[in-house]
Amino acid sequence: MRAWIVAAFAVVLVVGGAAVAALLAWPTAGIASSTTGLATVSLPGFSGDVQDVSVKGPDGKPLPIGLSHGIVWPHARLAAGTPVKVTVEVRRPGWIGWLVGHHDERTVRLVTPVARISSTLLQPKRGTAVTVRFAEPVARVRVGRTPRRGLGSGRVAVPLGVVASGAASAGTRMVAVAARRWETLSEPVRVSWFVAGARTRVISYPAAGRRLLPHRALTLTFAEPVADVLGSRLPRLQPATRGRWTQLDSHTLAFQPTGFGFGLGGTVRVQLPSQSLAWHVPPGSTLRLQQLLARLGYLPLRWRHTADPPPTPAQEVAAAVSPPQGTFSWRYPGTPSSLRTLWKPGGWNVVTQGAVMRFEDEHGMPTDGFAGPEVWRALLRDDLTGRRSDRGYNYVFVHETIPQSLSLWHNGRVILTSPGNTGIAQAPTAPGTWPVFEHISVGTMSGTNPDGTHYHDPGIKWISYFHGGDALHAFPRASFGTPQSLGCVELPESAAGQVWPYTPIGTLVTIES
Image 1: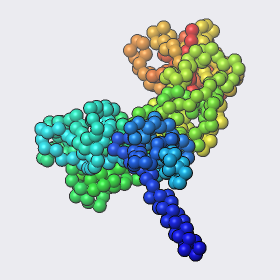
Image 2: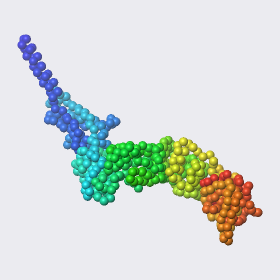
Image 3: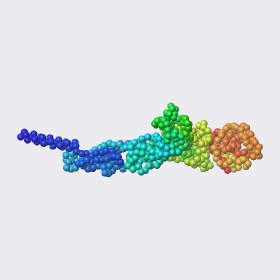
Image 4: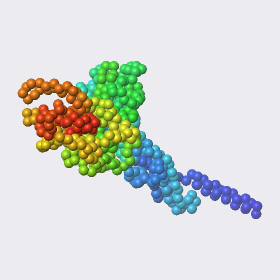
């Protein structure tokens, strides 16, 4: 009896051991990286059949995939270096499932491959194709804006489409790459080359003479190490710009502007030991210029935006290049039609020119009516800090029909009307609209009479020049209301004294019949 019990116990031990061994050693699905797809799934003999495959991205959300011949293929573009979790569910054969389990599940974490350029500084031989090499095979490459096709299953060397000779003995290209066809292209990487003995020893991105965006990094790559070319000094920027130089590698320096960046509409120069390089910064848009002038109180219009105003210098600059949506409306009811017809949103016009001149005058700048880098920087700074003009809007219109008169319009109403004199037939006052460009309380006026004689009149009061030698000013006459001047608009002294404070530089004067 005792022997039977021992034998039975031994059988149980053997069967149990075999079961445990089966559980531990039974073949299971394998998951590994793929040279073409996202992953490979292998099924050793007797492991079963794949019941389901799922892939989750770094956010835990499932990604669309397919399984073909043991390769998992993504159905959407993935970025290089993306961590994913691949899970495979296997249904085991029924004859063994009772022992080792009917289902098996394997999960592996993978990272999508990253293609790397072996060297970003090339030294091709003269007359040979400039070729970029990669540390591993790549499936997709874009040089500049041109994709390189026909890479097959992957190549480690890709020509840039340039032969190193003549003007192309030195140069630079932006190269974007993907290790797999289903990956998105990487951020472009700058690849530069120099042929030994080439005259060009420094190349820039953007290329010298090209357009430079206000906040784009400016990169210089030298044929020799930076330390050998510059020593301990950094390149000098003109005009001085807030930002920082960074050495990217032994041959490359980059300047990243901060604040309002490179001045809109200006020229940027970099002074190097042996040469000077220059770039043009595009101006801000006329529409955004008008939006800012309206917001700051320099136009007879309001502008209301449909989104929050830019809160940072970088966003102010971005809005200057690409204006936000919004609407203009006239600030005052009954705005003179002669002023309304001059306005055109998005197009340059004398209303905009006058507003720029007034802004320049109030900020102590040369009043040329041109929105250059200094004007844009001041406009953006005022908008960012909420600095508004509180002087209102003034407009002068002169009627040449007899009796001739001048009307002064301020903040929505005519506050003064006075008789005046315009030019005689031999020296007429030019019709049209002009901004005041010089504003002096007293001065000397000189010129030539129609008969060829000269005049020299000192002590003329309340002068506002608006077109060439034409001006609003006081002048002693026995009467007013008829053509008597040599092109100016003459006013009685009392009226001229009242008008003058309302005609600072930039004020529009319309001469109409």
